[in-house]
Length: 432
Image (cartoon, rainbow, N blue to C red; front, top):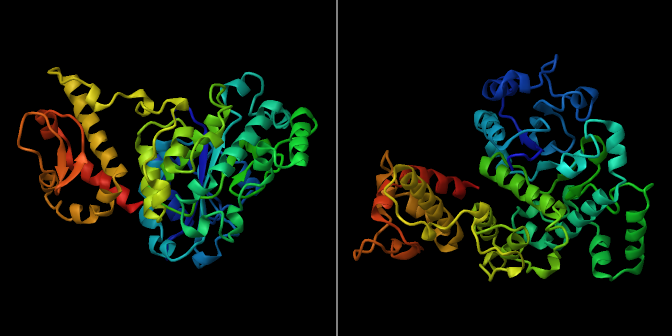
């Protein structure tokens, strides 16, 4: 994600008495006034007005016609087109107190949209300059981009049941919500060979330089309508949220899906070779047993999709037996007396504990009771709930009598774990 080009849109209500300039001032203090667009009137900027379009490299507070349930206080927070995960976190944490979170809980209004910049992929930039409109006009007629557009629609459509399991009922493709219409069925029909006309139409589209992307695209869950103006593909299905971890994980997931469909080594992998489960989707995306897979599993369990969330055997096609980012498991790291290695081992153990907790639905669902025991300022009560076996220097951790984190560890590392940090991370996961 370090070099990813992306932007987000958050449709939310402001609290009573909070003005757009109140929000902008707070945002500017957190990320810098040069990155925030202020209007002369102090009001919202008109959605896709000239003022909106001329400030795409700044954060904007915009209007949107879909926010009627927010009692006249609905706004669309639009990031600059090249924001970062760190900047997004600062922006949201600094302004969270201005958002009417209680009203958000009682409505199905609004959404969280993600724009992934495909025009800035290196292979495209070598031939086309995404900052020049003429190049963008040519780009959407190239076979490479058309193949990407088709692939993204195919993958999203195939895994739609899994993606639905990560979202609230009002945003699932089976709902009547016009803002999250499913992908046109012709994409999968052409892939499966079920519709001869669709197959022929797909071939003509790919080979005709006068035709432009998208083929059967729509302004539903996936939107290629802004490819010729922003150079992005937009993912529109997620419900409204102002939770940092949720926003960032959805960005990571959509970016991973897009890049998986683009990269030469993986773009021809057939999604139909993978099960319609969390593990099937994660395996297709090439995710290890990392936090993003764990987050998806938690979400599916939270929304009642236990069968989709249940751990399955990994698909061996793309080798998901290694950890995300090629990080070795803590089991593979020998104890070391050097300070730097020891610190690294502690960090790995914290990540492993958090990951095992997230992947264990039984522990996750009982976490409220567990966290209620964590009242000490430094988190020591939290540590005490992790009961250790008494035999030997190495062993397996337990929590309240249940298997918790089956990893080999050194008591020196265990004692150095930052339990306050872990408590905060797991509490944050429960709030998603």
